[in-house]
Image (cartoon, rainbow, N blue to C red; front, side, top):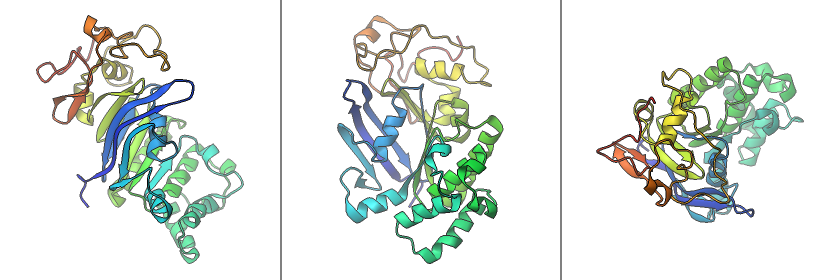
Length: 320
């Protein structure tokens, strides 16, 4: 298996809820073996709904999702169990995702039991996982309320790694932690990736976090992908006005802050044309009527903006 092999492939997936909200509207993304893809955007843009469909916690209305060549939403029985084993998640809040009645050791063992690992292997495997994520053996006997936020997130990572997955979805996995603990957990994830070759889909609204860990970045706005590309290209030369605006709000980027006017549109009644045109500082008449397609603007760099092309790789300057 090579790092260039596509592990997860989602094509044109859509999800509309009963209230008419188009939470995800034609999203396509790929994750290759051993890489980290950052999925970013403000709250309500559809990141977590996308993750739930990738994890088979929600069924898409349209589109396809394959994992290691298998259709995620068609596998059954033993193949479904193997899929669950290879596709794990580190949720946002370990205080609520870890059972308060179980010790850390029991929570990790629960994952091993669910995937039919022999009971005689549990103790050694849990001991190794605790050591690998930087927890002492005594933490295995602790209940969630007896541990700090950073320790709990390490425990959640250990639980996710228990089945030796190929891909871990990290849904705002460090957003509840303070900056110093965030850095420790991010460094841990990077170290584990080097050791184990695991791939990550890292979902966050914090671009400074995504910059630190991602190989590629996918930017979402109102249920759609508006820009995607290698991390270095996104940070040095963002092309879509929304991505540029997000970067301007990230500390330490050295960019002039861009203040958007107005509120995000109602996802149950999105505006015609480009969904961002109601807040975009450089919108033109065509932006208000025609939906922009995701087009190539550089090496593995795509953008959904009428004002962007190969000859004109940015809709507006990185600083305004």
